Amino acid sequence: MKVKIKKEGKQKTYNLIDSWSDVTLEKWLKVIDIETGSKTKEAEETIAALSDIPKKLVKELSLRDVAIIMEKVSELQSEQDTVLKKVFEIDGIEYAMHPDLSAITLGEYADIESFIKEGIEKNMPELMAVLFRPIKERNGSAYVIDAYDGEITIRAEAMKKMSAEQVQAALFFFFNLGKELLKTLPSYLMERSQEIMKQLQTEILQNDGDGSE
Image (cartoon, rainbow, N blue to C red; front, side, top):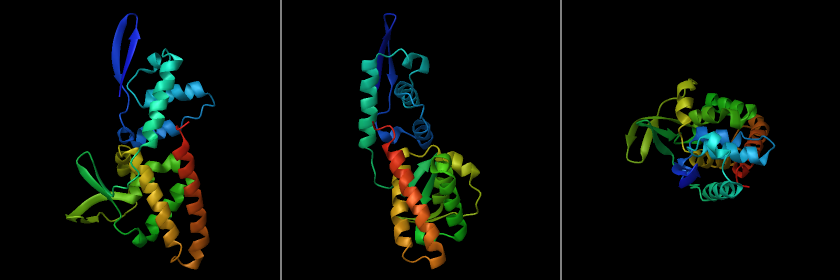
């Protein structure tokens, strides 16, 4: 979306996101982290995060223009694609979700549990780095991903470029699968898993509502 701003008799065009797929995980984290208590400040930070308009110039926008931009952002978020894409590419590398989440290892589950417990917003890239790994072998729609070794620091940085809408789709997918896993997990894990899934659902609902007012 193009935004034309006129200042001192001169008009300049800036870019606002055209769809929610333009929003990376890194940008989305900046948006959901905006809780200043001031609606004007939140609008200022949101527009700055989702456009290339200089923050100094954002402050000079009329309230009418700000309202139009924020309404457009809310509209784009509501139209986001919620279909999970299990395979995507970042910087020439194909990443894919674990082909069988019911077969995740105890180490993977422990790290997922830890990241959720510490706060999804703070650990979103790390959580995605556990769920998605580079494809090392592929035949049509079938694929094999790298084994999980717990070394996710570099991959978590790459995950910041992942589409925010796909992150949300992955969280919903994982939550729904988690409810199914509860039916087969050993009894000593069930109570803790229920707590984790409840917390995950709460975080998802809170994050999905941010920026939509």
